Image 1 (cartoon, rainbow, N blue to C red):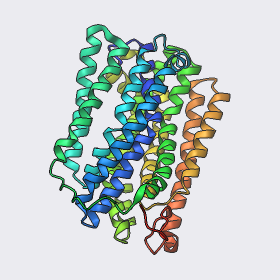
Image 2 (image 1 turned 90 degrees about the vertical axis):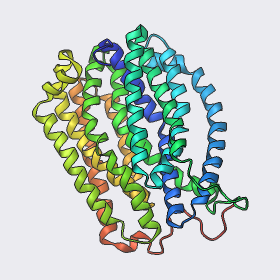
Image 3 (image 1 turned 60 degrees about the vertical axis):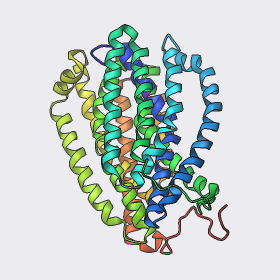
Length: 402
């Protein structure tokens, strides 16, 4: 897209993508919640409950989303004005993508909870491939920014449909199953911290781009967007470890086994993957930017070095946060949300240059990462904090769930 769109349109596209990621945080919670409970069904050999679980969640999602979509379409002109985008059509397409983004994670979470990693990988890879193909075709047809956003909508639609094929073998629920044994209150109790944690992670990695688009020129925002797209690879690539770790740790926790063994492996692989990416970005940032985005963007080389370091810390934060969610801890969320608020305040007051933005981001991610490491080590060395009964912090166990 950086080669076919103008620098201004490229910056606008990435600011919209960052806004999409932040506003779709509850959708991420749907992924983790469905992974969590399906992994529990798998551990207790109750696979016949999965179809009933999916049906109940789908019905609620569609009813809530329809009302929210209408509201979001009404505020499209205001959003386009804040991001300095002349047309509000791309914003309307964005909100349509958000509607799908809340439906897609449910089936993907079921695949993840069942530890069917091959179909999960196929769905993710195909989604990316279709996004690329649709994006090239629609932009070449002259649709520019609107075409790039439509590519996201079409690939999201395909990603919603495909997982049904890989889950067609799920056992049908017996007619006597009308209660999952977990109830809405327990799902909500677990969902709330998941939403907050996911929001914290996504805001920390995307809010800077939105604020840069607001405070800086279109050209500067475009250069920063190329740096963010490339640098965030250090954060996203080790995310495949999270996909595998979360259901395994969740299942171990449900079976009252030691989950820290999986964490050590996940941390080790993440350090290798993120560390290798960091070394490459530090060594040849100008080459990476000019090769992938074009020579116009190579001026962001000095920015990429600093941004990559921040994303190295974010990769570790992502692993630790998802581990703590899998074992149903929640106090770490305070560190994430505090960091988000501080990031917004500091960038709002101190935005003299793009270097200043990156110093703020790197400092905050380092402090948050240190806080999560301390909290995780504290749990590891003091096993009594792990709630030896194996009962969740969030569960209310004294009365049955309806």
